Image (cartoon, rainbow, N blue to C red; front, side):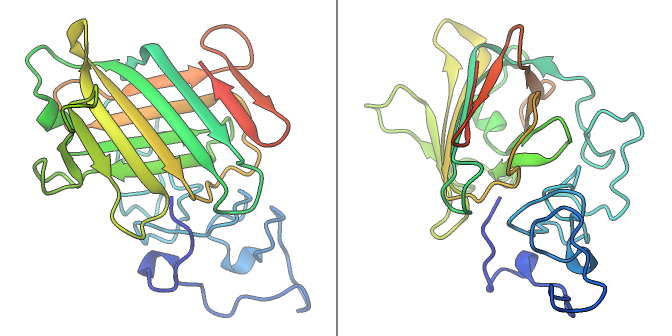
Length: 254
């Protein structure tokens, strides 16, 4: 998710937005943005980004990269019908972990680190997976804590993914374009002991992530262009995998 940028069409403000001094001012989610011009009036978020420009903010859009003003979800699983490509998907495997820092402070302080291990069909090429990797982190209210698209469907070398230097223990690496928000770096490889499992590492900073105070459980969804279903992981307050949200805006899940 990106910080508001006046040069970015997805961040254009909605006209005639009332202020707290105007009669009839209502701000139901308390994010200091009037409901009349809040693309997510029920989800408090410091950033009112609408990446697909369908009138629904990314923080409450079930398909933030696919135009769908209806935001329909017939099976009620939290994945919008337009972008639901994998049904139940496969479970994230060990090792997989998630860490978010500073999610409850001002926009731009956020830090996210994700390591995800997931299965693909035998014979899948890593370059196919890397054509497009969508990463979402949702909380119990379906509020988006993080969302990013790594690659636009074009081949590796033209979509932000490139070969990683030989000195790194990764095969491919991704770097977000200059000035993009959040600032993202990612790495991809096959699991060292199993060529049917892929490992993805994502580091994101300066994002202004939408979930100001996310509620457990946190759900991670990774959809990719390679052969095989997308991967999903759920981190709860107890049991395994587990997640702990601490004071100071820290979430550690593993």
